[in-house]
Image (tube, rainbow, N blue to C red):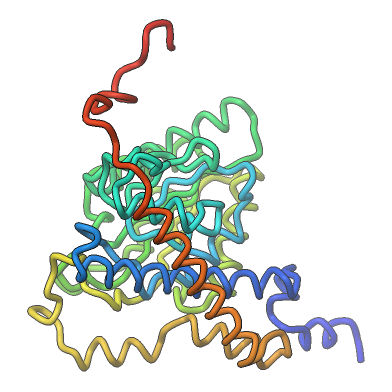
Length: 340
């Protein structure tokens, strides 16, 4: 057997430079994110938390992308469905549960902000705001700083396809293209901007917009973890070589309602949703691991029990944690005397 055919027979994750341990860890994060999301939906329905915006159906691409980045050095600007992504770069289940309950220990905002507004100086997760797409020009600014300081890092920003129609998107991409900045734009195209289907949002494809700004656009199956890993890894390598930004359009489907305030069956059918459940990337990843002897149903069952215990512990800790003090309302809004 020659070297070429030997490489072709390797499992795909090995061809991409991933170890067995890494690809198993990737799958574990996918399941953890899904179970956290499902629990938050139940907590809201039970009146335990006020609101939840779900990322179910989008975890595969989120976590695969995180594994392709430098999780110790890059800067991240996730959007509000990216629970899987922030978990994969280091945010804990307990921290996210504190955020869901709006408790003082919430690392994102100290209990001041809605869930899904992530922020962590420790993890280099740049605080997001509610108006969609504002994170795109911010990511471009971080990339400009990295270029000026000659650091081999990238900024990575996510958004939905609805955001690709906002002015912030186009201004950010144009500036990044002109300056050849080390930024990766990943559009999580989940087919709906709240209730507006893709056919009523766009006359073309999100990915094709990159051409007008002078850099590559790549469309990828967002339910294929290893393909997402590959394209994000290649985009990062381009960026640190000084070749500029990449726009990635990850195709997926929002399997849950827009939020707990939404009745999605008012604008789409149950049959449509059921059909897209068949494309879910998490079972695909599980099948891949079992096929290559890296996983088993027994290990899966044990992992699910462990996750249930982790969720129980995080929930109990969050429920018992204190709420913010009213007198601290303006804390972290204005700089204290002497701060720069």
